[in-house]
Structures are given as C-alpha cells and as structure tokens.
Amino acid sequence: MSDLQQLPVCIIGAGSSGVAAAKALHARGVAVEGFEIGSDIGGMWRYQNDNGLSSAYRSLHIDTSGGNLGYPDHPIPDKYPDFLSHAEVLEWLESYAERFDVRRHFRFNCKVERVEPEEGGAWRVTLAGGEVRRCRAVIVANGHLWDPRTASFPGSFEGEQIHAHHYRTAEPFSGKRVLVIGIGNSAVDIAVDVCKSASRTFVSTRRSAWVMPKYIMGIPVDRWGAFFGRRLRLPTPVSRTLVRWLAYLVVGDQTRFGVPRPSHAIWREHATLSQELLPYCGHGWIRMKPNVRELQGRQAVFEDGSVEQVDAIIQATGYKTSFPFLDPALFQVNEEVPALYRRMAPPGLPGLFFLGLLQPVGPTIPLVEVQARWVAALLGGAMRAPDATTMQREIDAHVQAVRRRYVGSARYALEVDAGTYTRQLRRDMASAQAGC
Image (cartoon, rainbow, N blue to C red; front, side, top):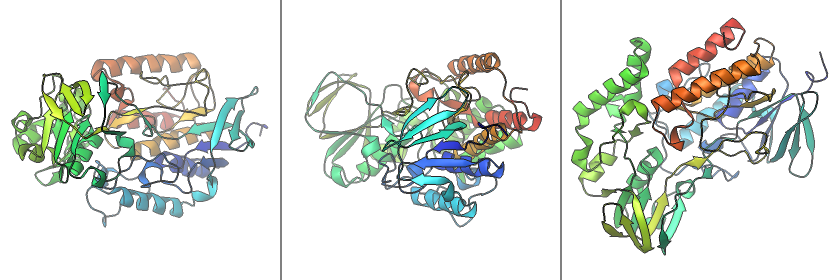
C-alpha cells in the first residue's frame, strides 16, 4: 500500500450526507476522519443546531413520505407518521449513527478553515487553531441550505426584515402585517405558519409555482409519483403530469384560490407541496401578490401597481452554494450547474468529492446514501474513474440537459432526476467502471 493510500479520507460535515459517507467508507475498509463544526450529528435536521447552520423552523416537516425517505439498509420505521418532523428525522438519523457506530469517525466542535491539494495527490486540511491533517481524499458534505441568498429591491424598508434561514417560530410576527417573498416549500410553510397569528399575510412571487397537495385520495403525493415512475416505469415528465392531473381532480384550478398559474409546465420545476396554502388563500388568510417593485418605508409597491402596508418581510429566496474552506480559484459554484462528474467529482481534482450537492425530483436522503456508496467504491478500489476528458463530456451533457428541462433559475442549478441518477450510479458500481 502506498503512503497516500495509508492516509484517511476526510469528511466535512456530519449531516445526512456525512454520516452516510462515514458508514459506506468504513464498510469498504477505508479509514475515515470526519470534522463537524457542531457538537453532534444531524446537520440541518437538528433544530437550533449549535453549528449555526441549520435552517430548520419549529413547524418543519419533511416533504417526502416515510416510505420513500430512508436509507436502503435503515428504512423509516412504521411508528413514524407519513411526513416526519425535523425532530423525528433527527431521531432516525441518530438511530442510524448508533446502529453503525458512525460518531466515532467524527471530531465534533471542529471547524475546517482550509482545504488545499498537495503535490503527490494528498490533501491538506487546516483546522481552526492551526492543526493540520493530511488526507488521501476529501468529501465535502457541508450542505447547501445555510448561506442565505437575498433579493434586493429599489427603495428602503423601515420594518423588520429577515431571511427564512433565521425564521424559527411565528411568535415574533403576531399581530403584524407580514410579507413572505418566494413560493418554494419553505416560503409556503412559513406563510402558513405566520398567517394564523399575523394581522395580514402576503406572499410575493415572480413566476408563481405549481402547488401540489401532500395527499391525493388519502395517499401521500410522492407515492403516486413512485407508482407511476417505478411500477409503471413512465418517464418523469409523464408521471409528474399524471400526478398533476390527479391533483387537479382533487383540488381544482389553483387560480381559483388566487395563486397564479405558472407559464411553464409542471415537469420543468420543483412543484411546491402544501396541504394548507390553497385553503388559507381561499379563506383570505394569505393573499398572493406579484413581485415587489419598490419598498417605501413600511409600504411594499408591487409590479401590478398595488400597495400594501407591511411591518415585516421574510425573504424565502434560497441559498448560495458556499465552501468557505476552499479557494474559489480551486472550485466554486456560482448560480450555474456545478461542474461535477456524476454530480460529485470535479475533473482535474482527484480526491475531492461533494455529497448532497443536488436537488432531486424525488427524495434527497436516500440519494446521498447511493452517492456515499459510489465514492466509497471508488476510494475502496472496487471501481475506477474515467479520465478528466470523459468526465468533462459527461458534465457538458448534464448541463445541457438541465438547461433544456428546467426553468432558467439558480433554484434549479442542482436539479437531478432521482430515479435516473440512482440507476446511473448503480450501473457504475455494478460494472466497476464509472461511465460505462
């Protein structure tokens, strides 16, 4: 074994991606050294995480039903409800960590300051306080939902303004006139949470979104998608369109509730899931507004010329993808599709991998487990990677596919089709050669 092979693999972050990576690498006999800035595992699912990076709010429930959520070797137990709360997801992750003794691979309260390649193929990891660790590879699993992206509007606002990352409960907004900017899942969750105690609640959106109920005929909506996609093997655009038709039969036309109809097809975006948004709009508790044109003191002027008095603004406008420990000249993600082979490996930087840097049409947690096994197979010697030229060709093809399929927005830069992507990674592992 070479000197390089004797070095451990470094994992940055102990969320759902990091713990899956630690387990998969250990199963392949690969030495692991993980670093987590917080005091325990869980990442974003640890409410009020002391690492300061969790965006979880008290009312948060995951939008994937339990039957589609778990790891293959650690499914969600039947004791949980269809849609788990953040506390229940964390409890399940902790049971996974205990079952596979994952915590022993991590150093907690340990911040990574810098990651740099060395000559010879090793990686140099500098920790807070100056300690340096050498690794044969680095797996970045620090998440992509922690560095807020904010919208800028002409004028000035005299009320309170926060990003959804900092939202926890509705109490601070009781009796106030609240404007939520955005119509993704977090935006809608927060608007529904706030409207029960706020004086008035508005939701502002530029292009609107397809709003889907969490249940259709008493069955979680993602199980319908799984039935059409896995059982009937229909293409994702077809299965999503069928689910939309079913939802229309159950809910009706969303414009009837005041939610504008998007100009794009449902399969070109991530539909917003909410069982409550449309009824609350129908009751007048939430009022839909177009994009903000200007802010004037405590007034919001919208693109349709309407004006509303507003005391507080909550921006649910997404996140930047950030790696503060990496030199941007080495690797960075702006608002474009990341240049990563199989959504994990940057060509020309052998030994550097990113897990969970995706937004699937489908569940994320089981997908990162497959990613973890793919990287472990590569680092454990059970699979070979293609050359950098082949990697780049695959990246170019993926970028073009994303641009053709999804709405042109930073929100969709990380999109993948969960079923297609999972099959792709499994084929790689089965053939022992990525890209075959």
